[in-house]
Image (cartoon, rainbow, N blue to C red; front, top):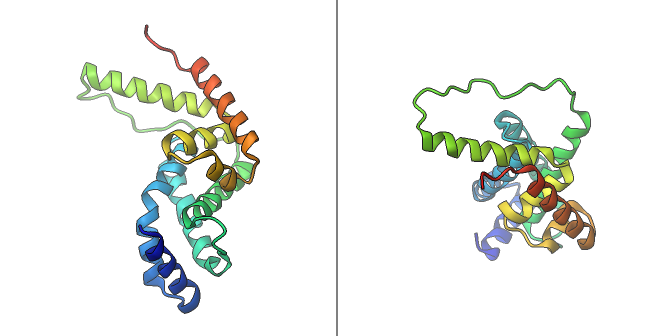
Amino acid sequence: MKKFDELRLIAQCALADNRRAFGLLVEAYQPQLRRFLMNLTGGNESLTDDLAQETFLKAYVNVRNFKGMSSFSTWLYRIAYNEFYSHKRSEHPTQGMDEGFSDEGLTDRSVESIDAHLTVKEALQALGATERAVITLFYIEDQPIKKIAQIMDMPEGTIKSHLRRGEDNLKQTIKTPY
């Protein structure tokens, strides 16, 4: 979405309470926001849906508070990260593993693909929430360090430290077959 179109839609939301304009913003940013949350939640789709819904709801309610000091996407990611962090603080340790996996119809190649995906997923889950968020924003969402620092409200040097530590932990966790 072009910056001008984004600003026009935000202005329509803030000044005229235009829900249709906000719907267009949701359509534009939902895929990448859900992907970000999906990685933070370790693939928990229902939690991702809940957090995405809360993020967009809070963004809609607070759109008048958006000052444009950062991009709209940075502001959304910040809300999403805060929602995830709030959930983590209130989380109970009684969450189970994913259910419903069936190995019917799997080929050797698809099993290798699933194993590789699970290895990366498990490695990401082995990271702390902050390292996982930094790794996800940097490598999966392709965000620059400066923007990650804004999203997570941390100094750039701290983001770089979390990124390096996360990379080191991922290298140790992921087992290569070579």
